[in-house]
Length: 478
Image (cartoon, rainbow, N blue to C red; front, top):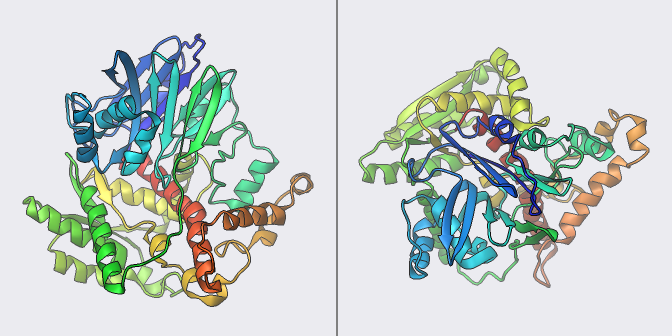
């Protein structure tokens, strides 16, 4: 995970006097290397966690194409690097290394903004076009990598973190009535595209844009689209098997040690199994990491979310994989202390002990590997939550995981509720997402509702988990 930031003013006058402050604000994201590109029109800032092509992947990175110079800061992982590189070689591009950063940069030089449609990966990046005095920026389809921005006195300022925005501007970390509603009613999630603090926005997933002398223009380049399913059950099973295996295998490209989270549940066990097989073919042994809480066996209680303790199955998976297993136990006092660091990492209130436990877990994992794969967000895709399975929960009007708006509103002062109705605020966001759900005509009520559930999870619940995972990983350089 890396950090990117920058300040753009196509008319000139950029001093970059706060570039190092922004870099320091993101140093947890990239402890291995850092760099700054500076001109009087643009400053691009980078902090790097080295994973692929450690020497030749330094940033900011520049290239020349058709007489023009392009400069990039990039945070991401491109999983089809070889395929895109092959196309670029046909256009006469030359490469000095094997990093995906160089491929993304050259792809924009050759294909322009259409480059995002060729990428299979997770990313947030910005590319400065020196000739056109224009910045192009983009975020991956799911929104794994963050990208915050603000317009400040005709300057476009961006960063991987809100604290990076504040470090480059005179903006104060203030919230208004809408910000209060976000924290109290939507939290630990956020409305897509909203930065909570006044004046701070977030580029939505699957969006890209330009900033130049004509101002800011943002476009959506991808969305979930409902299509007719024509495969048989057997074909579907084989197709899903291929997609899952391919996704895992592509994420195992690394020049540094790699491992997996292993809870004992289906998702992490599947990922660990595929990863173990691939690493064995390389002559390597998989390292797995499992979290346990002191006295968990004594106090564990089954719920609809967690019908049994996954830890019961960890030992079976370790024996099956023949992996190097690490069991990390965390106690309540440590969790409590880490809550403060977890809030610092997120820049906003989050998921309490979920955040702090992940932070401590990642801190221990970093002692052994730099990259670790997890099964986070598989439940959103494969229907693992109660609102997919339970008809009663599924039929609830509103976000099925957030049915406490009235209770939460009791903690909000009248000066804010007089401006914004809490129930309307949440319900309007729910209905807007439902209305934009892509659905084929003539669906049954059940199928129609399931499409809505997928879209709601994609835009809301999944984003909350991604915020949590990205923040805590960055705090501990994982």
